[in-house]
Every structure is written in structure tokens, then in C-alpha cells.
Length: 117
Length: 110
Image 1 (spheres, rainbow over the protein chains, first blue to last red):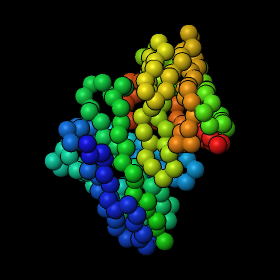
Image 2 (image 1 turned 90 degrees about the vertical axis):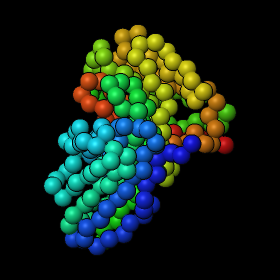
Image 3 (image 1 turned 60 degrees about the horizontal axis):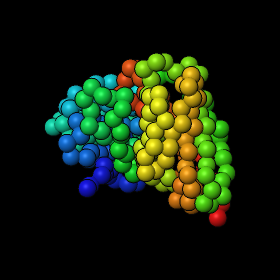
Image 4 (image 1 turned 60 degrees about the vertical axis):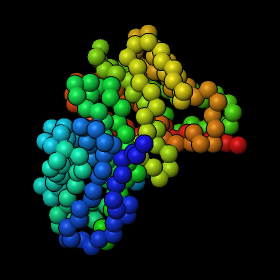
């Protein structure tokens, strides 16, 4: 079946610009996660949605980062006034969600590589 | 979630077994032990998880120490496709997110 997809696969932007990154989770998965991965490091949690609501946004680095999931499926990560330090691979994952979060497998997309010049 | 410690890198020969260690001395009684791996230029993928007993699936085996302070991911016959970064992650009650450390970069030689 279809896995998690992310678009675009690559995004190059200039410092100060606004970008949107899209994630299409596996159909039926109620939980959706955004992570960020810098070169040579493990992914770092940003935000977690259960349905339409952000259940945990403690990983968002500052108020330039915002994410939405208005209909409980597709999610968009939005970054305002981009900085060179925002350059990274942004990964999206989805899972069945529910109360078994500690065991539910997360399925990851291929990521969006963001480069801020 | 409690912290895990893994070697930065390991090497293996193709067709041989690989034992990837993970220390988690501060694990709590309700923490599950998960392993994910990340192939080059791809997102992480789930490998296996366990709580107390050893676990087997089509990808690997997970051996958990009796005191649960360490675990070992076992690939029974390494292939070139198994070259990846392997992450050992504890998942408890702190939230549904995965907390990745640096992982172990496994290199497989033909």
C-alpha cells in the first residue's frame, strides 16, 4: 500500500522567506509526527498530532515554526522568516495512534531537504 | 524517556551475524525498547521492539538482558542492504514521540 509521502523532496529558499512542507500520512493513521534531522545527527522531534489537534508541540524551536492538520489527514509544516540554521531534512511519520503510543510503529516518509541560502 | 548509549560505528562482513549493543541503565519498568534503522537518504524504518522477553521477527532478533539495562539487536546474516544507522530508543509514558540518539552506523563489507 501507499506509504507516507512528503512534498517537495527538495526545497531551496532564501533567508527570510516563508516555506511550507507537506506530509500525506498513511490512510487511517490518526497520529502524525514531524521531526527534523541535521547532517550527521538523529532525527529530532518537533510536533505530534492526534487527529486534527496538536497533542504535543514541545519540540518546535520557536514561534517561526507552525504546523496544521485541519482535516486529520494531510499536514503542513510552515516556517516563517527562514534562517540558514533551519537547513535540514524534515521528516514526517504516521502511526495508528490511540492509547498504545509506546508500542505503535511509526512509518516515516522520505523527508524534505530544506536548504536556506 | 531514559537515555540509551550505542557505539558510534560497527563493521561486519556480508553473510555473517551482527550483534548491535545498546545500554539503557536508567530504563524504567514501563519503558519499551524499540529499534529503528535509517538507510542512506531514507527516513527511519521500524525494526523491532520488546519489553522483557526476547523477540524475533523477519528482520531481526532482539535479546534483552534479564535486568533490562541492556539489549542487543541481532541481524542473523548481514547483507549489503543492511548498511544503515541503527537507533535504539526507549518509549515510556513521556509521550508518543521517538527520541533518537546518535545511533550506530553499521558498515557491511562484501
